[in-house]
Image (cartoon, rainbow, N blue to C red; front, side, top):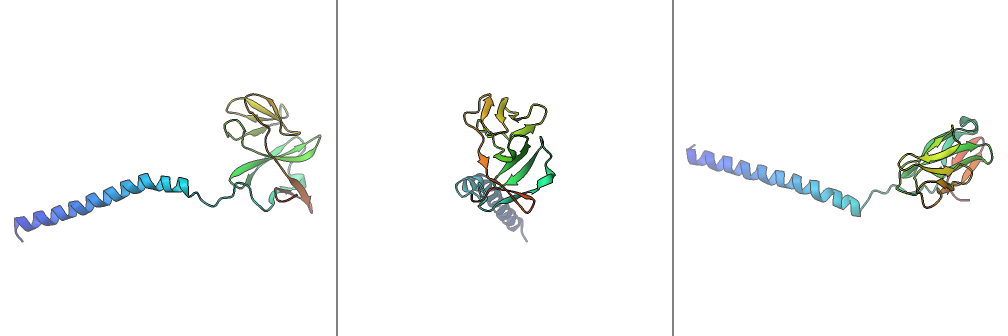
Length: 149
């Protein structure tokens, strides 16, 4: 093997390596763009009811966050209405809300928005609209949220 033949093989290897790195870089740029235009099939809201546990699993005045399609739901056992459920996504900037039992309100930690546990209405802060209420049914002692009315 001559010196000239070794340089050709090295040059060929570097071309292959360069092409491979270019393909990886292009995939890193184009992949997220494709995912944006063709998102996964995760449902915004499930078409079938989702279990939130047994009827006694949420004491009065307490809450539970439940996976509900793409976004979580907040299930609260209120003294006035019993068990209610709302989308846990704030209507202001889509932060996740949480139940604050000390003040009996749903709060958004991002911009100090507060919602009523009775009807999901805005009490104070920047949220423009109430939280989306989710249908709650009790079947054989199990809490089911969502589904058809």
